[in-house]
Amino acid sequence: MDGLTIHATDWERKGWLGIANSELLRDVLARLRSRSAPTTFRWVKGHTGLTGNEGADNLAKAGVELAPTLLRDPPVEFLRDGAALSHITQKLAYRGVRMWCPKTAKPRAATVRMIARVIDSITHTYGVTITQRTLWNAIRHKDVSRTMRDFWWKALHDALRVGTYWEHIPGYEQRAVCQVCGMVDSLEHILLECDAPGQKTVWELTNHMLQAKGIPTPQWSFGALLGAIAAPFPRTGEDTLKTGQRRLFRIVMTESVHLLWKLRCHRVIECEGEPGKWPTAREVRGRWRAAINRRLNMDKGLVAGRLGNRGIDKQLVLSTWCGVLEDEATLPDDWTRKPGVLVGMPQVVAESGVG
Ligand SMILES: [Zn+2]
Picture (cartoon, rainbow, N blue to C red):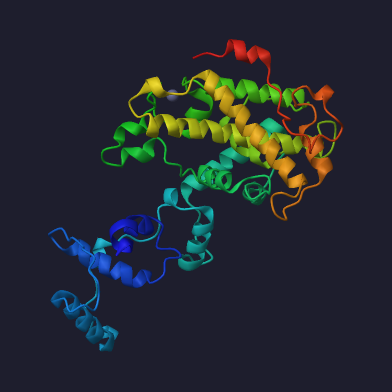
């Protein structure tokens, strides 16, 4: 019953992928929707002699005996096909692709445009050309968390719930426009253009950390930010980065992009119409630091074997974070077991923060 009253809309958006008895549920749902009056449900204890309950039981038993062809077809016009990309995870979508699509299925036009844009920006910004496959594989890299992977996957498909997506949702049309700037909202706007407190702070902190690590900080473009997940630096020649530099780059860039997205979702959804509740630049700075420190602590946990069997090479962790830690000169060579190790923060940014 919960399946029909609580979960049905969500399951339908997810294309019923992985839901047991989905055929039956869809059938019942179509019949319920075709009714002109609202249908209410009430739970009653079974097999206690209640007339309605006994009657339903008998009808069900009789129905099982009927050949399927004798059952009336459900009114399928009350159901929707497929799944909404914005409501599913990458894993579910691949299951759907296997279920519904022949091998020759054409990619979505929006996806093709986005991928071309990102690959082009990568060539322009980092001086390397990567293939689509490399880009898609990058979001499955082990340094990319599951939440981050789903976010990036939607971003590369241009399927995030942002901007024009809301124009088609009755009652939420106002979300299509950035509340701060009055422009049509988009991931690009959120990451690079928005005047909401946070955007400038995040990139100042990011650039500062990358510079401390000897990593180039180009003029960020939207495509270059999304492409950063592939850490696409030349593998030979003078511009080659060391493994630790690449790894820090991937961690910091993905955390920064994702933090700006989370901040925007918080503003739009939780603080709707209440600008007084928006996080200030100072709070954004704190959240950025917390996000990076969480990754640092995860690495320490991996070295110590605390996080199950996903071990990690201690040298890789040391080389990832060397150069960006607070009071690094006072730390032992191997600080991975020392409590209280944090990433360093620039003082200048603290004073120039706005908001
Ligand atoms: Zn804005």
